[in-house]
Length: 416
Image 1 (cartoon, rainbow, N blue to C red):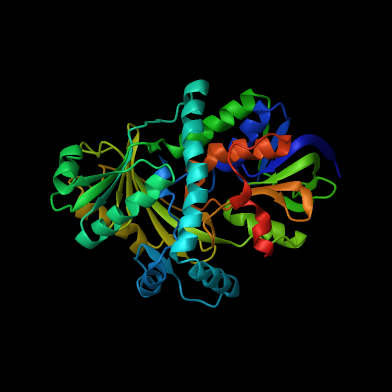
Image 2: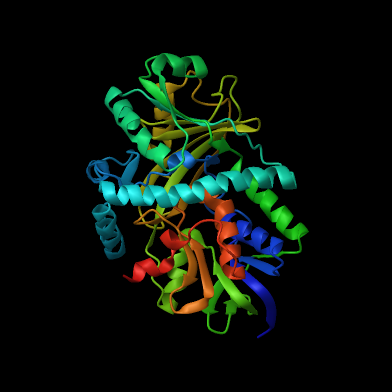
């Protein structure tokens, strides 16, 4: 077996793996990225591209469990758990349910906000400093609400967000319509997050790959990892090669549990399927990204297109597009937007977000294997958390003072 040696091997060429590669290269480390398919082929491709400190609150919130149980009866609901016999999912849901309380909600919000706020600043610096061509715009984001009760709940949550450093302004229905003429009348109000931003995610990932290569990094696509020896720092690939390195970083998103299971490492990640529809740009679009809170649909417009996305489906690794869930995105947009679709539907997509039951990623050395470092489990926020994750990984690997406190993301927490 041929053996090549690198300083750092990164498994996964999605947004997290490439961000880790960039910041390690900046720190003077030699890096090779391995991916079985290619750059940005997973959930980095079809998401809505929002950079969202606003999304610091976790999915595990008081009341969400009842919503999920109701959604199990409706395949087009925003949160859907497909009924089936799956012991791993059952255990995950039980632990998730235990966190649907205010204390754990606040703790997760604080941990997520730290990464999101740091990453928002780093991505802006990265786009400007490296000239990334990814349709970046820092014009904020708005939650638009039609249901008055939901609007009141969001207003009550605003102080919690401000407490963790997230800017938020409450807009009346009249203010919202004045700011966003693309909306239909009848909205109760809106929450404006001026520090949020947006980019086109597939182009952002492609640009990360470009600057990684330009900085001397190697991206090796088309080979799958079939074995890891973390103590020897060795990977075995399905093309017969062996690769060795001082450190190995696992950035494989929703595929992480299967990769780590042979090593006895617990990575309680469930694949949460998200959907999106990409159109050519319609003549009337929102001025900034919108989250239509009643149907839980995200709307993003770029010069190059227009996307409706979101939903959360727990159905294992079933790659089929469910037509009812796709059309629920369109139906939700029609409730809010004067022009809910573009002239041409360019792509209908689904992908798996790596969901942990505490809604926090795993970033740090793997238990019992100090040469193996994890950077996975970012849920719906991989793009938003990408730069801070890459910087934190580089800080930990290089023994520097970390850019954020790594304690909330330490993989060792799942051994308790």
